[in-house]
Image (cartoon, rainbow, N blue to C red; front, side, top):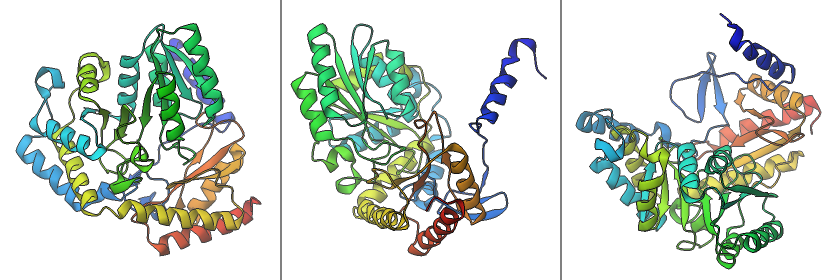
Length: 396
């Protein structure tokens, strides 16, 4: 039923379909893994953020089940009311130790964390310097803060310094925050953190790094991109997620004890959200146990990704500036990206066409992700499918 007041919905959706920008939900039957069932077919999953394969690990499932029996299913309230459980504080201590920070604070999701952290740190009259390729949650956190948002071209440190200099001259007393993804989720490249940390120090700006796609997969023991660059202790605000390499759900801020206390008192997405359920918290603790028991796992993942990326390049594909397990396959046109995704699925490979506005016009792509649980046979199967489909559509 369509009401007159909501008639714009049909119009809007029609325009999306005409532009090939409409999105549909695809149903996965069964657990996440290197192979999944879609529409009754078993296909190779090359688009998951389950980088270490922990989402279906039996140790996480058992930890969650035990926590449900011991602590029940829900936390019952926000942390500041009566939802603060010993499990939450244990996980925060473990995360702080993992990230080599003084403290950590849990959030319900990475999106909620970025909204809550940024809007708490800066406000009207302040400045946020945001990389042009930052995740939507950073962009929305900047908007919510009501600070003046100053974007800079992707990974362009000279442009960032010009903007920092202008901001320092015009409003010397304003707070300044530089917010970047550590690993950019659609490009798979790294932020130049050493230069960013140096600029932040020089211009007295706070530096916030989103490690959603770096936690568990980069740096010693998978501690993230900050550790990868040897900058532990030099980045005051780190955001990480529990929902990608760690296989569960939720997010956290890591930094000083003062940062944690400040966010507890000012971060609205923390204050006004129900605390994470005990089974979710317990599964994250189990994921940390597994990762720390096998510190070589992230390195093995990155080697798989490097070889896969190299093989795609040898075929003639443009994988852009990827340096991680996220491998964009640049297609360009929206129609061709959709066709490639469809034809790859026919070959038994699940990928997703990434289109504007998620990526800039003219850069539609397939976002391919390699996981630790992909075997070499799996990856060879995928490469052969890419060879067939690329030739069929004339991309290679």
